[in-house]
Image 1 (spheres, rainbow over the protein chains, first blue to last red):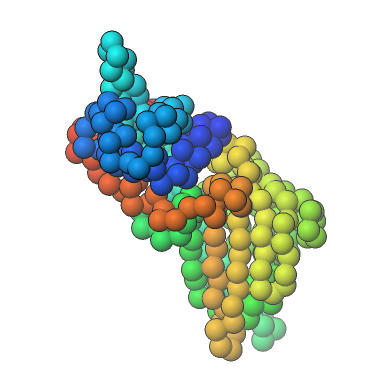
Image 2 (spheres, rainbow over the protein chains, first blue to last red):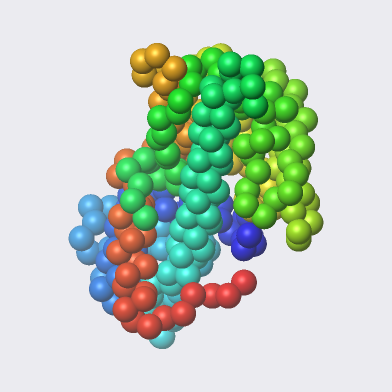
Length: 116
Length: 154
């Protein structure tokens, strides 16, 4: 099983738990933007958006390039892929366990007449 | 990845050929678990289960590449309807995740089992989520793949 940093996953999940942050990530899909550009469509203060940007940055989902007074933000999807792979691996794990559980229950039903 | 559950969760639904009591017991009986909690390359599974709220369990899967240990604590035990426990392993990298099993009778000797595996154990955080991130995830992955970007190798 691939190994992921537990605390990194925590930060990714926490970052994604907010709809404004998810919307920011969606916006960055279209290309890098400054914090001001990101803040434009939102009905919250620039300060609030800056906080969200920082959370995303700390989760590794966003990279910031500072050029003079401009903070240019770009999407870093790798942590999302890691989180998604983690979940996908567990989906496969549980699908297989439930297959085996079904088989186990079925074989017991057959055997309940006293023979194996 | 199609996932209509709230953020950070996996949800699977299955119809199983046994009544809820039997299905429930398969999850709480170490002897039963030996048979089915046994992924492909695993030669042997042993389980120690202290089945009470707050009780701990340890499941060891012995495979060709060594032992895989899964452990956790029971949070809810409502036979035969509901079982919830934390789940920690190398695969979760030490993070405490939560697995919930819900069982509903679907006619004679049939049970609908719903398994939910949540990556975020904080109930408050999970309930705040509306509209999961499954959709954005799919779009972002497609975006990155198209752009030719490579995922980080850890």
